[in-house]
Length: 181
Image 1 (tube, rainbow, N blue to C red):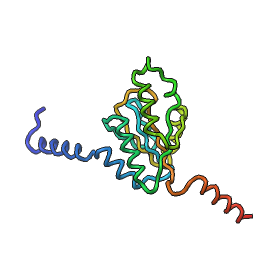
Image 2: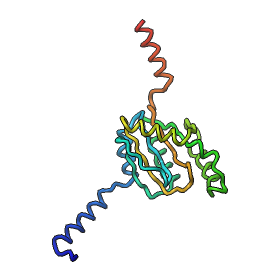
Image 3: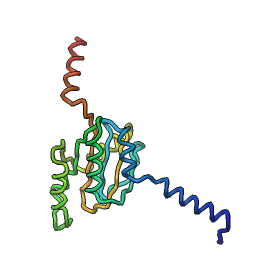
Image 4: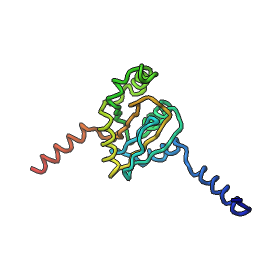
């Protein structure tokens, strides 16, 4: 089938606009960070991370190094006035052997350095996926897929309020309970 004149021009223009319409992942992070708050998540995923289908989950392919994406996202969050990250990692990462996943030992060391000083924990992978599924029913989750090919290397950043701590919330709830009685 031969494509002629206006049809060919239309297809070329469509392709140009389609490519230009895809925002750079950094622009996406910067734009969405202004809208995100506590209860939202940003996930820096490994290349095999599944495409989840809860309505609030958005996945972007970065075609970038995972540690570089993590650096960018942590820097952007660090510069915000409204949110701070709570870091969750797959518990399984602690047990992945270097013999089965070359580079995992260096990766664990790099991740420890990059998340030092941040609130962090490790949870089973399936639990984290379930949390995102449930979160995505009501809140936005941004997943940034990267090129890393080390199992269980996804970094889950749960956003929390920077200017109101859990301790402040607990005191507020106590005051409200006292006032109710």
